[in-house]
Length: 64
Image (spheres, helix red, strand yellow):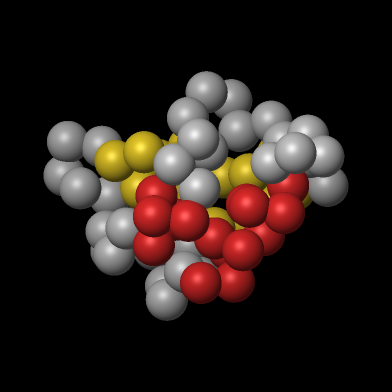
């Protein structure tokens, strides 16, 4: 599994970073970015799903 952020949708609310700072970070404009290649394992997939559910812009996608 892999998590991605649609940079066109992200408005920089920061909920993803607040929920899962080991998966998400901020770019120079304050918008969310995925750390590394976005690969998820059994330890990080639930945090990514929680961040996805809390994104007000629905900018986070989890690819199976």
